[in-house]
Length: 97
Image (cartoon, rainbow, N blue to C red; front, side, top):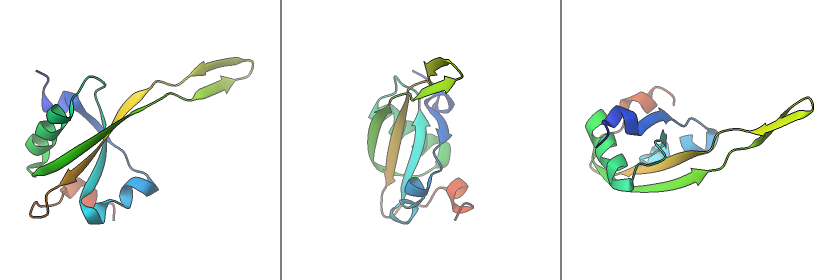
């Protein structure tokens, strides 16, 4: 079993993801082999909150060009974590609003 720091890689800060803060929905970049249960346990352990549900999506890499050479960026996994109504918010994201 992986450590919580190995499962949650980074927060995803976009205009769309910031719209979910009011509903206690937070978006993270996670390890590709992590399951929803692993992600929920990692968020609860790292931030001390109660997770209601986790939605995941695999994000495909994008085509990029550098002159005549082209390649792909790496694909990654995204998780949208919804907290319970009585749970506190994640303090890291509070400073962004």
